[in-house]
Length: 248
Image 1 (cartoon, one colour):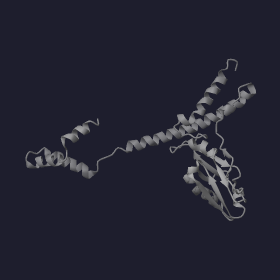
Image 2 (cartoon, rainbow, N blue to C red):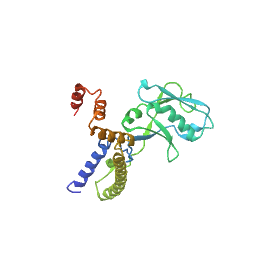
Image 3 (cartoon, helix red, strand yellow):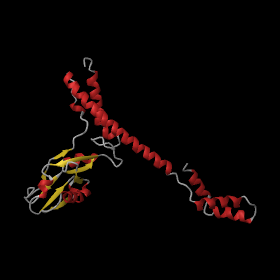
Image 4 (cartoon, helix red, strand yellow):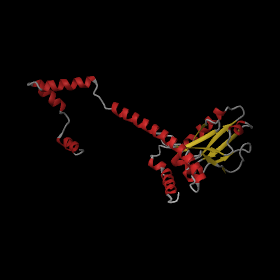
């Protein structure tokens, strides 16, 4: 503590964590979940609870996300819809805008978007209703609340011994999550290596037999050997050979 080593290490880790998206190629999300399709930012929208959307009269919600050029999407709500049906309607409407919807493990309506698109979605999510669940009139910006990151090094305190004990607990928890993420990535790399090993193209049996017949025929003197060679060389001009060699 006296020489500032611990504080410097925390700052260093915090800087590394903030570069997670770039250094992982966008494959590790804020919860350290790995996805080859790219990390997603999950979020909820204030006022869009399944309980609130489930009750009330029939209403059509107009939702805008991103630039105006992307257009406005409509979601129809009516009494009697299940939570899954409500989530499905939002998902179908917002998918063209790069936003997906579903019911999370806590039973709440949750949205997600690619992490690199999150800033635009966060600052532009707007809803217009007919006065039942959301106000009528112009589009109203709504508050989007991102899912909390699994590691928050900016909150780690090293000012005294009590703070250090608490920070140590958070570091231990972070290590467990990092190790789990490393296992997921290692497993994905192992599977990719296996696919590469089995992806080497093999000649079909018919092609292999034809190649063997060609070799056998060309080794025999006479007209049949000449016919095999000339048939194989049809269409191969000097210019084509030169152009192919130039690709090396």
